[in-house]
Image (tube, rainbow, N blue to C red; front, side, top):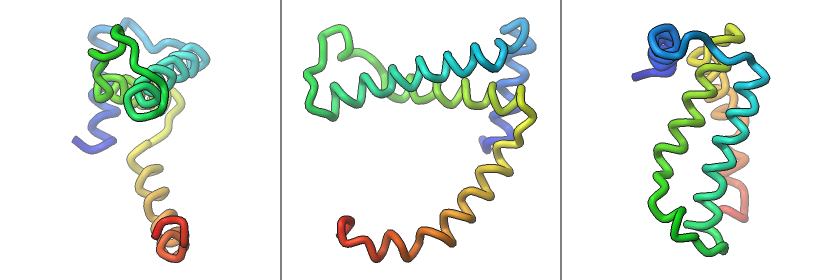
Length: 108
């Protein structure tokens, strides 16, 4: 599924199951919450913090999917074609960063 199809799938889900989109500020707060959940897993599982027993069954993929879902909601409700924006960003990063990263001594 490409990003455009994902935006459509989320919009259809909202129409069928979600009554309506939460407003943009609520979705921004939701996004912050979901990113926080991802950060907690990363910090405890891959960082130096110890993982609590209650966190050991948390699914990183599920939490990342929650982040993507809310980002798609925000894109839909603000009229952003995320596929187009992502494609432009990849092109920009490719042109701008290719040599920069290859020449970065810290990455060798």
